[in-house]
Structures are given as structure tokens and as C-alpha cells.
Length: 344
Image (cartoon, rainbow, N blue to C red; front, side, top):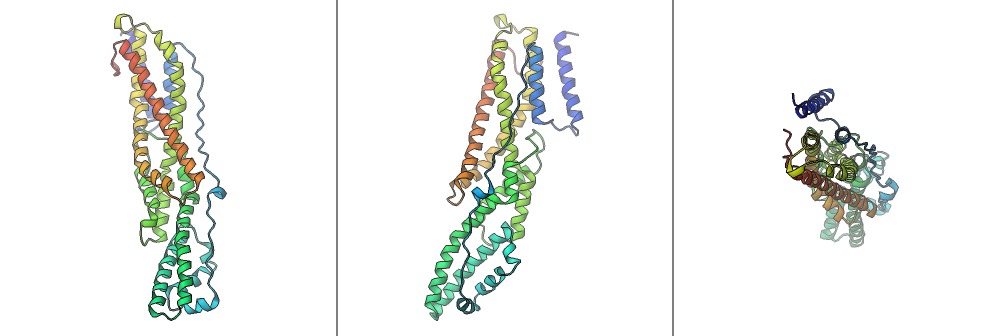
């Protein structure tokens, strides 16, 4: 059996073994693929590549930095008795209970949204009857304040709720070329939550349901951590590979045995396993981008939150540049040696 074919079969068997060990035919973790890829290249090139440590920390701003304090609505006792004929009176009384003061982010949004609607209706009723113009004016001022505050309630939900914080900054998993749990549902959930101010009447159960889907998928954090891993490992190879690849003998465009083995490693690890994970990452990021753009444009979200999103966007661009550079490096090598990317 030719030595080149024997080497190729050994690499192929190692790939199959790794897939079996990781169960159910799923691709192994991204870091494992990248580390094994570098290790195989170093072995064929008879080189020693240093270990790459990739910092995947996503430094999400503190809750204190992001939280919008809310101004309490003040209604005097005489005014309170005057609005009992409006739904507003019931809402104010509800808020003053112990349970009303312990609302989660979803319940707070639903309450504040209902309060704005009730204020609008109450002001309209008072103006129609003209029975208490001064109260109508005071409630109209309160309505305007609460309408603005409603946007801050939404901003708090997006920036500081436990579910969104975890979805935007914490994930133990990385992107794979295969199944990424709840990814599409998570993308849709974030989009739904982003457009909540325009959603009309919604329940706290609906909001909490979308928050749980987003928390389960953690797709933004998974994408952003994965692009950090890609950048760290591939940028290291982009620095280490040009010199040894240039030394590979391909006189007159004829590939040497070593060149063919390198091509096989590139095909089995990068083209078959690493690049598909990158393509999946790209698809998710492109689907997230319209929602991220909407968040960036909101005047109610904090600058610290927007800076965090900007950093993730810059890291995505860096990852794309590193990936393109790596592919270009191999295109040059394979072209010089007159080799196709596919293993032979």
C-alpha cells in the first residue's frame, strides 16, 4: 500500500474514532477540532506549535451599570378616590399590594403597559365629561411620564433580566456543524422580545416563555464565544504556517508526498469539520444581525450595553478576516503544488 494512502487512512480512522467517542455521530467540540487540526499539521511538518489558549470570556456589564431606575407614580388620596370609576383605580390598588411590588421583569412590563392604557382611557373619559379638568391634566402628565418609563421597563428586561444576561454572555457550548439546541427558536425569541414595545397586548406568560427559550438556547453567547475560539486558533496557524508551507517541495507544480499529506489533513479537519461549523456560525450571526441593529438604535438602552454589542460585532469581523486569511493561505499552497482541496 502506498505510504500516502496509508497515512490518509490513518487520519480518516482517527476522525471516525473521534466521532464515535463523541456519540451519535455529532461533530466533536470546536476546540477539539482546532487543536487536533494544528497537532496533525505540526506532526506532518515536523514542527512544534505552541498550545493556543483562547479567552472566551464575554465581559457583560454589571446590572448596576445597566439598570434604569423607575420613577414611582404619585397619586393623592383624593385623586385616587376620583378615579375609582376608571380601570386605573384597580391597577393603582393592585400595585400597592405586597405581591404587586414583587413583580418580575415580565409582570412589570405587563403592568406598566396596562397602566399607560388605563391612563389614556381615564384622561379621555374625564375630558369628555369635563367634570374634573385639573385631574385630567395631572393624569395626562402622568401618562406621558409613564409612556416614557415603559420603554425603560423594556430596556431593563432586555439588559438586566437573568435570562437575557445568560443568553448574551454565558454558554458552555460552542457552535457545531450539526445540531445546535434551540438555536432558531432562540434567535426568534430575541427578535420577539426586541419588538415587545410594538407587540400590543401580551401576557407575562408569553414574555416569560420567550425569555426561557432564549435562555435555553443562549445562541448569541454561543456564537460570540465560538468566534473567539476560531480567531485565536486560526490566527495562530496563520502566523505559524506560511514559512514551513513555503519550504514544501513542489517543483514544477508537482506535489511531493508531504504536500499531499498536508492537503489530506486540511481536507479532513478544516474542510470537513471546522469550516462547516464556521458556516453555521455565519448563518446564525446574519440572522441575529437585524435584531442587534434594532437594539443598537434604541435610545433607551445604555451605552455600556451598546458598547458590548459593538465589541461582539468587531470580533465577528475579526473572525471573518482570520478565516479568509487562512483559506487564502491554503489556496496559495495548493495552487503552487497543483493540488485540489479534496483529499485523494
